[in-house]
Figure 1 (cartoon, rainbow, N blue to C red):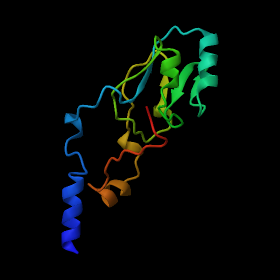
Figure 2 (figure 1 turned 90 degrees about the vertical axis):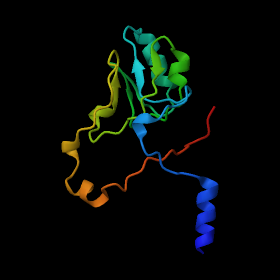
Figure 3 (figure 1 turned 135 degrees about the vertical axis):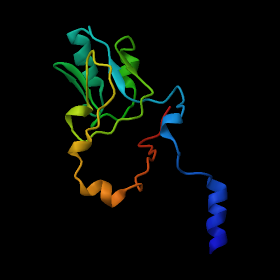
Length: 138
């Protein structure tokens, strides 16, 4: 029994990243989007229709990270106005912090005061990040 567990560890290697701040992400990684200001209203409406999940709003132009699947179609359609950064810190305790607005290039804020006090006590160091592929990729 123990030998099969050791065998799995040998074959799979280390499953956790000890220091997330030291990680270098590949260039193709799509993290936090940035929307440059000045996009025309008709182009914004095209982007809104293009988004498969309805994550793009037009008044004002914004991307809702709670709905976005990071498909990259908006960046392909308007590369001069939308780009995805390598910023992987996209968690928030408030819904409003997940709305990326036009002309704002700052990290997603995580307000620890909004987290219920029992959560850190229950989970301590048990929370791990995990990559999930929701539909293949390019």
